[in-house]
Image 1 (cartoon, rainbow, N blue to C red):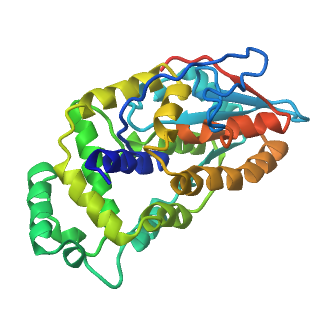
Image 2: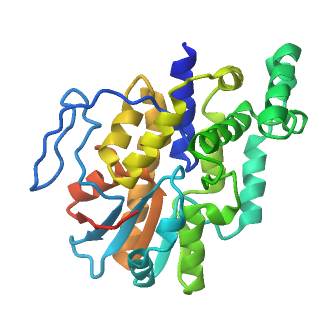
Length: 333
């Protein structure tokens, strides 16, 4: 497996869980548009591609709902300030009874403890996995680029360090003032902001899955020896195109072009079927009954990673297939 191929996979894995990812732009596939239902395959050989109107903010109505609910696709490469200042989004949150995220983030201590639990290795150390030579190379890299040594991570799964390195590289590519989740305070996290804003209005806060499930899915779905290889490839990555790629991804999000984000991410060169199934398809399918139950009982504002909205396994397509009207809302990011 080539270094370039592996780095793509690293960024995709982290993007799905609301941090950052790197992907190399693919050739644009021919789009077919159907203004009536906007559910036309972008690639007839791959049913995962479904055309969506340009938007990251959607209204859910119809199918017997008494009040609309809302669905927002988040992307943590993108600075959150413009979203936080958007009065239209705030008005929609005010109109809802519950704010729902992938996780309920109202207990940060519980989140931290659960994440730490699944980050730790019981029967080995990073030093054992890497060997002394590579362990020292990682230590040197981290001291130089992250301002901390590897010793404090010795019992943690390699993917934890891969995420830290990924965040550092993206922040560097986008400029030191870029607000990247994990590089600043928790308040810079747009999902956390939505929930805190909702809480300030007295709204109910809920999550679609537990932090234990999410942490286990990310940190335990790849074998430790493969994570160790990814870590070494991450510190060796010298892809000159990275900075431009990060900027392009942000531009796609600013344009609210979920089609391009989806094409980059769902290409089999970047995400194998088992990864797609575990990180997106299975989680979307588990979320959908919960989403239906919530919107039939009360108006809700949902905020989940943008990739969860895309494709035939995405939340938008599946809700439409069930008879709901899922309409794009016009906002400026």
